[in-house]
Image (spheres, rainbow, N blue to C red):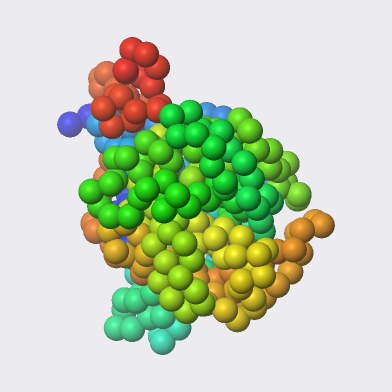
Length: 349
């Protein structure tokens, strides 16, 4: 065996969504903040390709790079890599990162609760982890401020027609569509059709609806679609399906999606500080959400949401790149990456 490069990865999933954590073999990218480090990693993009493309990864995998925080008031930083983008924030990935940091001893675990602060590209995330017998049983993260940008926006979607969507920031920019209006029950057998519809909605929203974060103009444009059943009320479970580019379902209930949904409901006057709701994924896993407080973001009314969920470590892997490997940064094929490749159906490194 020859290894031109070796990386150590802790496998993890939160609510079924894979959020692997890179703990060794990568030096921190340059940058004065984790956001700038994310931009440097994105400009090069070789690490994401290596970890998420076949033959070492897949379209259903995320990866998180642990880095030292650039702030004195944080325990660690992390950069999120998803199949086609570098989101500024992700709930399921944050839950995975916190669980790995605590269960591997990278951050000291204190029972019955450990509190820590993580620097995400979107900003500082407060974490409260319920811990018992060396296990991180659940993680509650206090997200960055979230807000609705557009309510009841009209959207023309190829192959679907005219839709009404809400656009909200939950750490990522979401277009939120009504599942019943689209004819979905949000059951596992609809996964392919949901994914196709979600990608069409995402693409249309990017083209037709402008959205720019008021404090960071680099965080702009809808990057993810949520197809949600009508809200079931405070304290109840509402089903949703989040479609991750390039067109597949998030297996978890999606923390940023729940944050965006609560921001939209708050903008409608349906949720207030202290109110709670639960989102369920298509496979039945759940994240609990609550509005910690009301705030503002620029000239917009906003909320600070908290999301609670659980993650499980699945293994520890060393990823190796042989110098003679013809695919050192992987490849994608249109059978599983339907929107990510050109007409030839294959995208090499």
